[in-house]
Length: 352
Ligand code: F6P
Image 1 (cartoon, protein in one colour):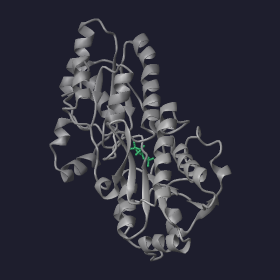
Image 2 (cartoon, rainbow, N blue to C red; image 1 turned 30 degrees about the vertical axis):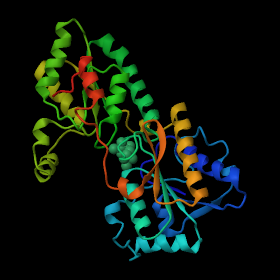
Image 3 (cartoon, protein in one colour; image 1 turned 180 degrees about the vertical axis):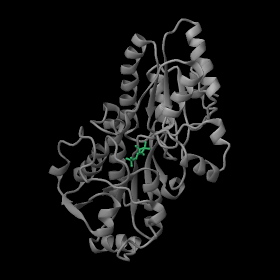
């Protein structure tokens, strides 16, 4: 097994689910944990694990194996010492006479997992990420725990925003998609939600703030995705956007939005960035159950000798999704999705 990419809550719960399911049916099993994601597989850093390693980890955040990012775009490039990384991973797999490799990861991780499948290795994957951006599954584990934390941040901001009559921005993670911001924003009662899939117009945002002020509200709360983008910037080519960013004085999009609101309305604006807190701490009960279920199904796949699947979740059912269908595809929020329309009907502005 290995855990790769940014960590999240319930990675340990998922691995425990795999191991418990297999050990429940067979004593004849050896489990190796590769350390720090694909690095462990490339450089042969691993440890043999026993059932006691999986005891007491259901509630533990992070990953007992450690994780790292090994970008897919560099996977075919030799390392600093000229080592062929893909060949090294295959050699370590064959040297240990593995039957199967269980890989827990998000988007980038799945591209490499699929490449290893194409290279002839037996692969099963589990979808982890707080971003919930993996195609082929309605939900990833880690997501609900992160929604809880981001919501709690918005809840805490609510009371101080109310006291001081300020505009507050809470910046939420989620990489290039808005699932986390949309859900935490709705759960926390944000008045404005900005997500990458719906580019914003700053004037629409100030209109929404003014409308609230006209109705007697002394404060406004914005949930802003770290990947949110203005209509103006969204219209640029990738190259033009990169060039523009070189002269961008703001540490993140929230600070830019804050400066513009302040300039246009004269209101006091504050920014809060919970950041990596959203990936930390204990998994919420939902994620503990969810990750255990997916892990259990991965265990069943191994017992059946069925490989080349990601264990996903669709229409409230645990499903087996062919890995080649998943790799390289992003699941983003559709601006036409019913949840977006419902949020708009509630009076939430998306700045569009
Ligand atoms: O993919 C999970 C995630 O937390 C994203 O939401 C965020 O953009 C990114 O990882 C942060 O990455 P890093 O931990 O490398 O700073």
